Length: 44
Image (cartoon, rainbow, N blue to C red; front, side):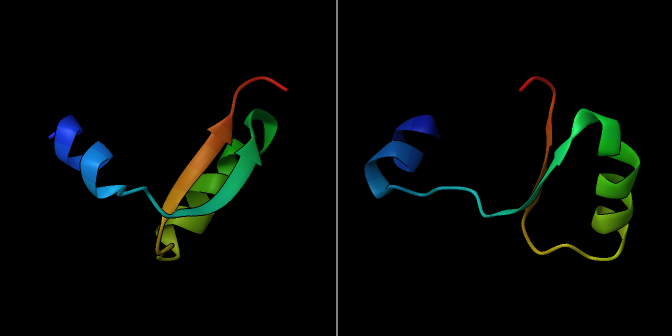
């Protein structure tokens, strides 16, 4: 599967990026029906 993703240049859709301190907001965003992926940034 990884080979197919690389050869077809398929990338995930990132809807929003949140700091670790805002993880609760990230989950709220997810439950509201976010289209893409939600990223929680652990370090700066």
